[in-house]
Image 1 (cartoon, helix red, strand yellow):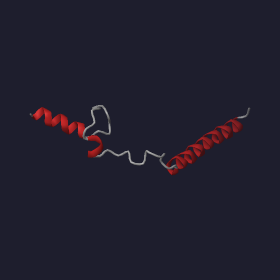
Image 2 (cartoon, rainbow, N blue to C red):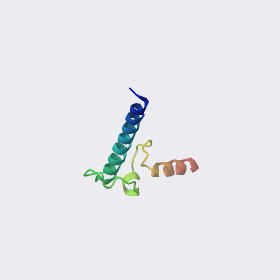
Image 3 (tube, rainbow, N blue to C red):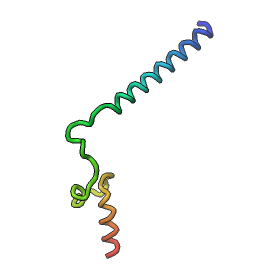
Length: 71
């Protein structure tokens, strides 16, 4: 295999991988959320009585911990 052919194949492979990445990223951003996942944001009414302290959505668990430590 000649050096020119190797460079051409390397550029072709890298370009195709870049195109695949860009197209898949655009399609990912345009995909709508599945049903039931539209309102996944934390809120006081959802998280106020949650017992799971390791949940990254439960921002109110930290407030409860601080209030209990002050008492």
